[in-house]
Structure formats: structure tokens, C-alpha cells
Amino acid sequence: MKDKIVIERYAQAKEIYAGYGVDTEAALDKLENKKISFNAWQLDDVHGFLSAPRGAGGGVMATGNYLGVAKNAEQLMRDADKVFSLVAGKHKLSLQANMVDTTEKVDLDTIAPKHFKGYVDWAKQNGVGLDINPSCSGHPMLSTGFTLSSEDKSIRDYWINHFILTSKIGEYFGKETGIRCVTNYWIPDGYKDFPADTYSPRLRLKESLDEIFARERKTEYNIDTLESKLFGIGVEAFTVGSHEFYLTYALQNDLPICLDAGHFHLSEDIGYKISAVLMGCKEILLHVTRPMRWDSDHVVSYDDNVRNIMREIVRYDFLNRVNLGTDYFDASINRIAAGVLGMRNTQKSLLSALLEPSNLLKEFEKTGDYTSRLVLTEECKTLPIEDVWNYFCLKNGVPCGFEWLDDVKKYEREVLSKRG
Ligand code: RNT
Ligand code: ZN
Image (tube, rainbow, N blue to C red):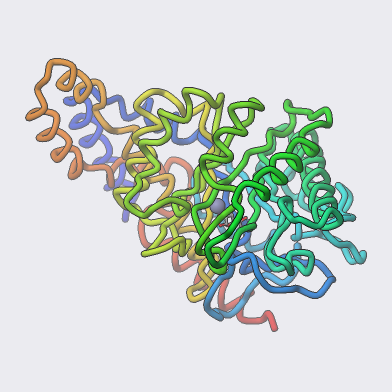
């Protein structure tokens, strides 16, 4: 679309929104300043770059065989550059602890900041932040299906050490980049079939977490968040780290939790959980994703679920208490395009929330005028968000519409297709 048209249409949209009491300029400012943490594992199929052979399990796996998967840290950073170049604003890259940037032989129990220095240099150069996640899935030490809640002390100790090392790398990220890091804890532990004892593994998980959190942590540089899950592949019957488990633990220990949109019953909208959880947690992390029929981690879509999540963040001014991250992995399409699309849809959903005349809606609700609340809610769905979005992209020097895909296709021809 021509710049002139984008600018003209924005001027009109600005007036239309103003008619509903919405300040589009203020919305754009907030949008520009909200960092979204892009999950780097969309680029390497959740594989990592350890030299140790990969095991199975954990239930986290990208399906598809599209050309050009990132096979080392250098390729991953190059791909992330491409993704970020097509998304407005400055964001964060969320790494897995197994995405080491080294030729040294390291494993999850020997990783150290030096194995991530390349990412820090890259992040500083590009003004982006870094997040990290301990990596349990696909590792030989997960062969029993249990990590922090294992009955075997040596397995528990291995993972306790890994989680501590990962958080320390998180502190290093925060200190070096000047942007506080989020280290997100997720473990796959659970049973395929109905357990006889759900209490003991939970007790062990609690004790492992107590041990991990016993050390003095540098929360100015890094916060640790706890991600729950309802079920996974191979753990259909029972998950040790359930929502209730972590919520209770988080409240007792003053920690933030992570809500992943795919980790609940599918009709359970995580948007409405935010105002409840923030009663007790100072802040939270969100994993924005698209669960299709199950926790499938499809590319984030501009859909009702994501828009409702964003509405719930914006309506009560929670933007500073909610860390936004994406979590999807699709290897059946161009991974860079998947990355860009999911990030742009997350951001566009946030824009739709920022453009909502929420004061008007709240006013109707207060006076018991639910008719007007519903009518206005429906009206909002077709207000000209596209014109504001295009202007936002233009202002931030990224392509407005569908055109961004041309750039990705060029990258596929010139870079991805040459990877073996
Ligand atoms: C798994 C969790 C977790 C992972 C990443 C790879 O179900 O959602 O966030 O997706 O750690
Ligand atoms: Zn997740």
C-alpha cells in the first residue's frame, strides 16, 4: 500500500476512534514500548545445539520438514534478525538452555554464561533483550519421564543443578543487556496412565524447587517464572506441575507464574485468569500460542482468544505486570514466516485491545446497561484497526501488509535453501 494512502486512512481512523473516546496516538505509544519475547524454538524445531545425543520424550516436538531449520546459534541469530526486521519495535528473544553457542562439548549440567556470550553480543548490538528456559525435553536424563520430581535423587540433583545454572545465565543476560531476563521453568514430569500416588512426586517437586530457590537470586537482572500444564504427549493422565501446584507454590514463595494458553482445558480462556492471578502474583509471564484441539502450539493467530488475553491486560493497566512471550513451533511452513506472523498477530491483538473504548464499556456495565455493552462490543470488532496497524508499521519502518512475505521468500531463496 502506498504511504500516502496509509497516512490518509490513519487520519480518518484516528477521528473515528476519537469519537469513541479512544486516543490512537497513546495506543501506538504503548504498543511500541511493549516488548514481546519471541520463542527462538520456532527456528530450531525445539532441538537445541548440544553435542550430546538427543533422547526422546517431553512431549514437545515440532512436526514438519520445511527446508532451512537453524542448526547452530549463528544461523539462529541470523534467522531471528530476519524475524525482528519485519516486526515493529524492539523485543526479546527467548532461548532454550540447550541452544548453546559454542564448539565446546557441553551438556545441560555444564552450561555457563560463556556458552551464551555470542547471543549477548548479538542482543547488545541489536538492542534486544534475552530470556531463557531450562530445557528438559528430548534429553537423555529424562528417560524415566521425571526430572525435578524423580524418585531418583541423582536425577533430581542433575535437574536442580541445570535449573540453577540456567537462572544464572538469565542473570548474566539481564546484567549484560540491561534488560531484565525472564527464566521460565517448565518440566514435563507426569504419568501416561492413572497414578497410584500423586502426592509424593509433588512433594519431591516442591523440595527440588525449595532447593533451587534457596540461593540468593539477583531479581534486578532475572526473574524465574513457573509454567504449569494440564497434560502432554505421554503424560495424558497426570502432570506433577499442575496449575494448582504452581499457583500455590508461587503464592507461598512470592514468585510469578507463567500461563500458557494451551495448558488448560481448551474452553478455559486464560484471559480471564489474569485478573485473578494478579491478585496474588506481582507479575506473570504469558505464553501466547494457538492450541488446536490440544496443546498443539500452532502459530499465533489474530483470534478471539488472543484478543481477549490482551483486552484483559489492557483494561486494568496491567502492561507492566505481564511479561508477554510467544510459544509456538511449526516446521511445516517457512519458520521465519511463522515467526513473523505469530509476532505480528500478538502485537496486532494487543493493538486491538489498546483501541477498545473500555471506559465506555465499563460505564455501561456499571449502570447495568448490558444491552449497550453488548452492542458496543460487537461494533468494536469492525472499527478500522487495520488503518491504525498499517500506520504503526509504516511509522516503525516495517512493511504494512502482506508484503513482508516477499522479504521472507527472498531470504528463503538466498539463505535457507542453501542450508544442508
Ligand atoms: C511445554 C511448554 C514450554 C515449551 C518450551 C519449549 O508444553 O509450553 O513452554 O513449549 O519450553
Ligand atoms: Zn509454554
